[in-house]
Length: 70
Image (cartoon, rainbow, N blue to C red):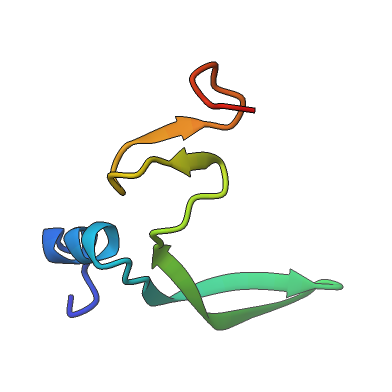
């Protein structure tokens, strides 16, 4: 349970722009060979590639939103 994501991690991600990574175990197969693998993935990221982050650093607008200037 030491790798649980708590409210503190969400706040750090939003306010300090600190990315959180976690290790997960996955089951994969390749050409009918099944194996497990430990993967390090991004759990929380302050970057959003589908939204424009406004000046306040909290609110966002989707790409193409009518309030965005061209």
